[in-house]
Amino acid sequence: MLSNEKSGKHLTMKYAMLQGSYWMSFCAVYNFATVYLLSKSFSSKEVGVMLAAINIVAAVLQPLVANFADQTKKISLKNLVALIVLIILFITFILPAATNLLLATGILFFLICTLMVTIQPLINSLGMEYIGRGVPVDFGIARGMGSLSYAVTSFVLGNLIEKNGTSILPYSYIIIFALILIFAYT
Image (cartoon, rainbow, N blue to C red):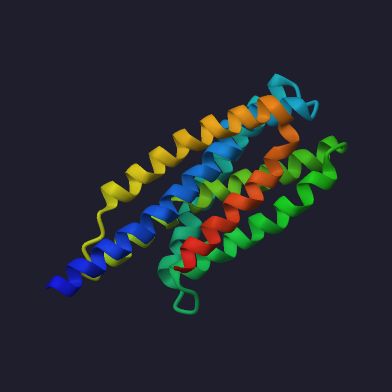
């Protein structure tokens, strides 16, 4: 029992890092979406329509991706999260090059944000998978780390944007999504 408890604490710490990095990404991408898109010459109306469309598309994709995760035996949940994050990273590397192209920026940002919102239930499921196996992962602590990470990221990025402008945001996405990838695998 002691080994299972120790394993649970260790896994809780790793899972907390995954939750923390996910909510850092949510903050960087979604919380600062309006600031970023307005700085790229989108109108307030266009930003509102884009964010609404992101949520609608993600609401459709989430159950489809979850169903795929439940049915496939070829790819683990951890690998599915990693695959989607790799796609996000690839798109994010292109985003800074599209700065002066409104349509390209809009499409790339839409894809990044939609995929990020789509993986949220998968990240929650990773914790539930271990709990289902009898490993005592403390989901509350892990989710609390997500909230704390969101708050710290909001403060830090807000200050960095004020000093350096919104051009730093795509680079912060790269760093944060790389963290998600690392923590998903550990």
